[in-house]
Image 1 (cartoon, helix red, strand yellow):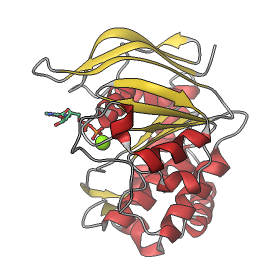
Image 2: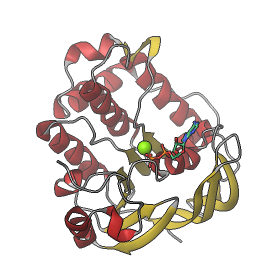
Image 3: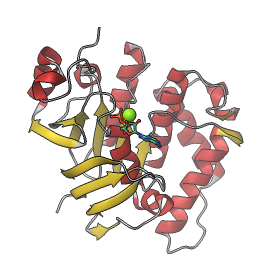
Image 4: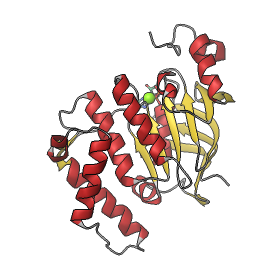
Length: 262
Ligand code: ADP
Ligand code: MG
């Protein structure tokens, strides 16, 4: 069994509108998967449902993580088990600095992994790791003491999402359009962050509209996602076909966005 398995997953909005219409997907350690689809196809809905966002209802199907059915678990429990989502639109948390947010998140995970007993990370150890990660990801030092995402530029928010990922060391990382709004240098840093993370303990699911990020993050598997369903699957070459042909040739409605960057 793969580390993360979605079985016939259906997701609806609070008003009952069906958005995700039967997704089967298996992401294992040592693998990078890409989900590529046009705007409005339901990619973020899928990502939110995967993380247990209460506004997105799983109406059918199951999510298995590390052999366990997590379909009914809350977002915090999924995070503690090692699922991580880098948001397309990260929320600001005024009053909570990046540093304190990260330390709380790490301590919550450590506590969960220590049978519910507090096991806080030692401050010097945490500081050292944070500074190293910030330097690697080229996150300006002053961001660490600012309130999370409060007044951050689009690019800063995305970098801080990747900083969270690097610090939390999830087992499955889901990146929802982390590439949008990033220049090439930032894109390379994000790609390195993903490359460093994925290995024998970890897999990643990169959700994107554009082929661009996949020039830096080499996916092992590409899934084309149109109108709530995976309509085609293949290797990295499929991303290039999408770039050339656009989503229309995969059944997306005309006039909707295609895979081109221009
Ligand atoms: P994508 O990420 O592929 O662009 P989304 O999952 O964001 O697609 O959106 C899919 C559809 O669901 C869109 O029509 C969008 O307007 C709708 N939708 C998603 N989330 C919400 C929400 N919280 N409230 C209302 N509509 C939503
Ligand atoms: Mg989206």
